[in-house]
Length: 101
Image (cartoon, rainbow, N blue to C red; front, side, top):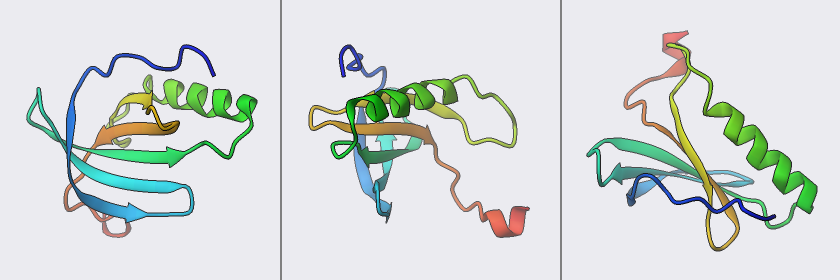
């Protein structure tokens, strides 16, 4: 995969692990510049074929354009030096989808 590293617009510091699944982990983070809290979903893509990696990154980039009041805001996507795909989204504190829906 070439040219997938981009300068991260925001710097983050991890607060705590929110959850863990088959493909990765989700962390609550503090955005150093804005002061907001966000969630970083860190997904291991090392096991994927090159074409699958490109497709995953492309799909994540498309999510940046989704703007709707019922969709959690997607902030950015980047690839770590270790080859993990990171999706950064707003943190919906205290929202329970079962109750909300």
